[in-house]
Image (cartoon, rainbow, N blue to C red; front, side, top):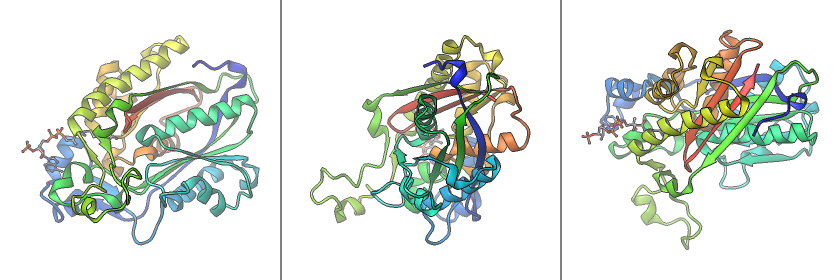
Length: 337
Ligand code: UT7
């Protein structure tokens, strides 16, 4: 949906955090039948970060949030709502929203958890944007974070997935734009097709099973995430451009108007196919999967923070975000910086 200009939401601070431990493709070669060459050629990934010891997704989220808060130059106490996106919460329940809220000492403000996997950041951004434009909240902390490394199948059977994913977090601060200067979120477009749920999922634990946790499922490796990689690949290459075109059309813009495209960092080949499908010059595409792998909900805010800090995104730029992932879900957001 297109937003009226006088009430747009702006991003006033960004931050990201990845755990210090770097895991290279060579490290993974020691665990399974894979190679640096295969991983680079098929995904573009060179290294990713994995947590060490007992670190939760909420811990990464809190570090990213602290950096976004510092970047926005605000007091944490001025935040009036938290939105948190992850597919890898610290616990089965509650979600990480309340844990982030408590660890940052944010009193009793509300905390919403968003479960839209790789599209989680844009879904969360869309929800936060509605709250801001409605006047419900004035300053929202949006965090997206993942710890994938503790539940990947590092045997040969799981090599298609386990080489792709990394741990990390990104955060943004959202506020209403007090000025009529055109800056802010122009649109968000959200899509899903649940018929494809089983093509990219973590099947177990499943409360329909009684009991939910069964040794047999464990022995069969059904507590690990699984995917039909080719089907995900084809759909991601098709759906992300569709979502971007929906945003362009709603805003009366053309592809040439886009200054920076930040696709979810799923696979560098997918990012390049999305650019090709949209006929966007590759120089305009923000790509950092080489260093982080696929950090699911966190990938877009990490890339956004990097692109802002290194000057690739400047005041006045049109920034397009797009994502595709488990659900299937896919989405786009357009932001005038
Ligand atoms: O955020 C959304 C989450 N997921 C994605 O975005 C993933 C989307 N899919 C992909 O990125 C790609 O499909 C993969 C990177 C997962 C796989 O690349 P591909 O070019 O589609 O390879 P493939 O699945 O067609 O597999 C080719 C071969 C297979 O061997 P055979 O059957 O040809 O003998 C695989 O068993 O590569 C093998 N293979 C591996 N070899 C070495 C699969 N994973 C690996 C691996 N190392 N890690």
